[in-house]
Length: 66
Image 1: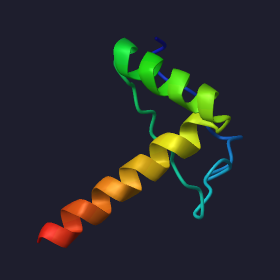
Image 2: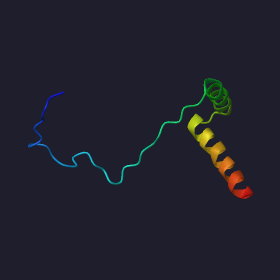
Image 3: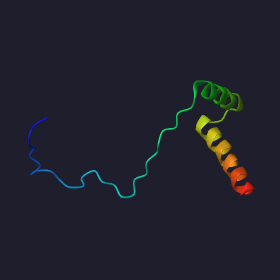
């Protein structure tokens, strides 16, 4: 690294997007991914949609218990 950098021609906030959303990656174990991929393929649905639907059902169950 240099001792100093020249930022005199830089633009503050050039890439800042206040309304940007961040999608964090979710990593499934290999056997879980394989299982749900096969189920989604057999049903002819998108894997992401299938997993989201299952998680929403789990949330509803959890919230119903409290």
